[in-house]
Image (cartoon, rainbow, N blue to C red; front, side):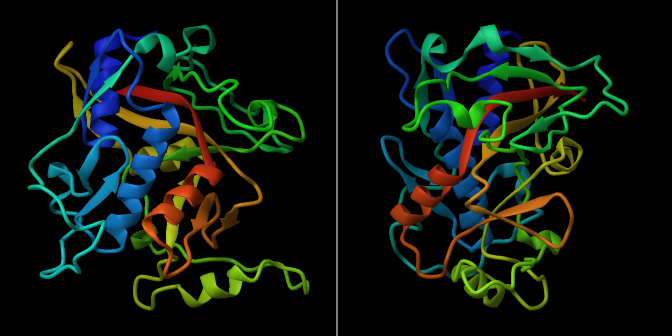
Length: 282
């Protein structure tokens, strides 16, 4: 496992919180971190400045190094996702490494090249994160229904990578390939949600290719060694909740218009489950 302080810095960079070590129980779980990263992406895409998250309160969705990439609207509606303290305030989150990380499943892909080797998860191609160092997260026996989602067989969920700034502003639109009568009704709603101009589908984006995630990932300079690192979350994505985009390798977890904050968080939690924190020195 990489230096613990480096891992905490990576979690801080992803979440926008000050993540610190504790010997007590962790304040947030790995699932909470993917929820926060995904929700910050989504609410920023929707034009909000803040979101409320249970147990830690108000979080800014606008990071200092994103200021030139995302311009906040001049006026924002008041509500659960906009009210709160000044954006410069960062919440402090305590985690216990013993119940958060799972070192026995760490895997260093830094010097591995798969070339033409093919791997699968859930009968779909798994592009391994070659060039990255994976810090395993403690997620076994944390979900109802067992751990088959994290396996390698046909019942496993496919692998998904979450880049910090990946959202619909990159010109990604939905694909509706199923013309059957029993196709999920919200696909039609999703198609209507595509924004003319920047062709943005409403929801949370991820990708099956770590090289794509790398283009949008968070970077931070470590106080541990003074080096700059990139950080990406490695997840599994619920195949029943994701929808493929027209741009190959992109997936959308669709969030219907009018969904409440609680419902949006539930959609993310049912769709994305983290199991690895990926680090790569720049």
